[in-house]
Image (tube, one colour):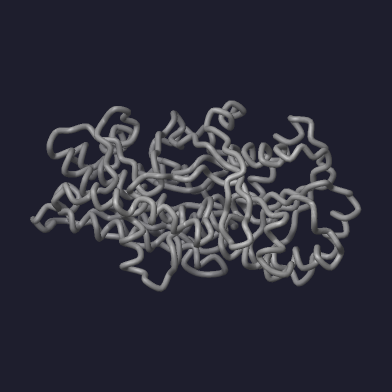
Length: 437
């Protein structure tokens, strides 16, 4: 997410039908990949290696921590311990409540460092607070795996900050390309006032205007209001030929209900990555008369999907541990992968000290031609055998650039009447990143 980072979560939950597809496609591959690696029988011992999930666990955004951020890390820690631990030491997950207000995040991080002096890695930060927290985290020399995307960190020199998805500036570039795909001259923007949505809005507007689009409306929508008639009236008056939008599901439900009432539906509508969540599509469907009605105009831009066998393996573990939670979503894949990358870097470095193993992170990811591993157990086994590895887990291949984030491609998806998403066109990593300055 996105919220203040509602769903970055970053970026891109897929509707259930699509999220389940990789598990069906790769179930056999995952079983084959893991069966040849025997878990270490020796139980981990000694002092614990601490992984802190720094995330909202209270307030309006508490669901980010409890539903999206903590579960994948708990799953990953359990699997690490089943494989014998990190360098033979047990992995342990703790959590720190950053609060739903960004103002509360800095003191929460400071308290965490006082209470826990031996944090090996931090998993968290979000777009609303990452700019303020990154220098604090970096000064304490704690490796942080994050999905935060603020443009202020695009050229980050923070050695200990690794971002697990492309920044919002690239997301905005991809979103503008998705909008330009329709070759409409008059484009309206309606983004909610949350942190990541506004970050995406800035880069989207910049790229659209740079490519000659006529942005006839640029409206910031306050979240979760009882009515958006005023905003929709502006949309109607603008005579826009298409709408680019990014809001949370509750805001979308009211916004689209007002759009239906005022006759503003019918033009193509492209949603940013924040909108690629099952709850968003269902909320809009209820407002406009069902998924079939919504599918006539709704599109969404998102990261190109991962196809790594590690996704199916995580899906099976997630279903076993959280049988009532539905299908896992991409942000969960990313944090699980961030945990595994940090742990494997510790194994490669033979050290759990962040100041040491931080220099080995890219040695277990940016390794073309090395042995591809999709789980922590596989990676440990191959490292123990003296092999070089390239980890490609649940979210696929993560090759970090000089600013410690992975350039990636995107795609434009069209909502189908059954709730699935169909690819319209793919934007390669090169096509998006060539605009990055």
